[in-house]
Image 1 (cartoon, one colour):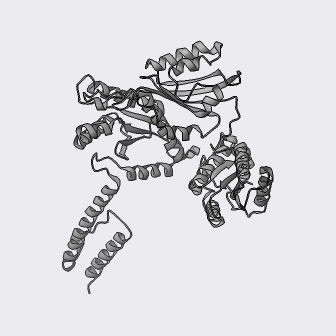
Image 2 (image 1 turned 180 degrees about the vertical axis):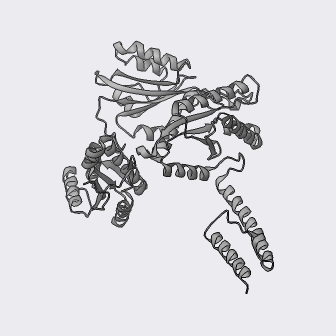
Image 3 (image 1 turned 135 degrees about the vertical axis):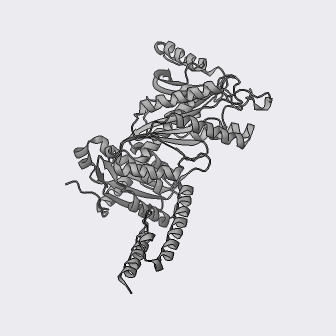
Length: 509
């Protein structure tokens, strides 16, 4: 075997090794091979080209939306992972097409696809050179901008939306084109999380949709118009919501008919005539403190007239006992659609009553936990309790500040909700201690959830570039019947936690 042939073979072997190791740009210099090996080299090149083409098609299917040729949800996740690894701050906008279902139902899915593509073109035209746009669902887009701040991106999208509405209003198109959006600026190195980013942008988008909903042209078909005597909400659903807290009173007002719906708690605490009173705004204003009444009436008039879509105020309202309670009211005006009337919906919080929700985690607090255990004691039910303690919170507060400690608790609460899978009631007892209360599970099921909590609860939290994993302790208590005072049960849980082994995390000493 001559030296030229041996070197040619070695070139082919090296080429195959590079391909086996995942090289996507491996090239073989066929012309440099000896004559007797060139046919093999050419065949390898052709095979590699075919495999490369198939790989690109597979990647395209995994990361590209077939209708718009934008990145899809997989592409978005991949891109954000890259930004997170680099620690690059960026602004994201969650965008939702308005009335896509109406377009599909009224004009057909082909027109619906054209509507999607028109929104896609409008969004693409407003992008800066470094921006990327993804379609992550039927009517959902996400725009990522590494250079634009939140306010600037909001202004760009607002201009784009206004131009779309102007171009399709006044009979210029079968329906008015528009979208809703919410923007959030995130910095991975500052400790921001993807959950926070998604929650913040989603919340802002939903609020925007409530405040800026575009009313489509009415159809001649009377069946598409709001029904005057249609109740504003399903009674069973409304009652389920209204009983979720003693201090919160949801309400719904049909602005077209004057009919309203109030929670049982509101009827009880403010001596309302019924759950479905008419002229309820006048009825409510009559209960507002005389010094607050004019300002409240002025704001509510703006909502009723359609000038404002969002209302927030704190003012005093007379309760059933004839005393004035400090209340916080948040409400939104929902403009009418083809099937719904103009509505005003919201919630009133009675700040004069004790709130039993922990402000950091959103879970029930120690008062809610004591009440829940007391309720189980009254009906003599068995119970399974899982107690969790997040160690070293004091050290986190001392080193990174109290906001950092609250983030650890909030992230832990979110993970606890995932692990419990909705099978129990969750509470933040005191300080860094949580309690999950189960009243319909066998001990084996409760123990299985406790084991899952122990495995997954200590998820890492970023403080700048520092990744912190909280150490935790988990203890379980099974009771055949709740026959003791809640304080006694909670003291036993604390003692069990002190004896429980620690699942180690990051040391801060």
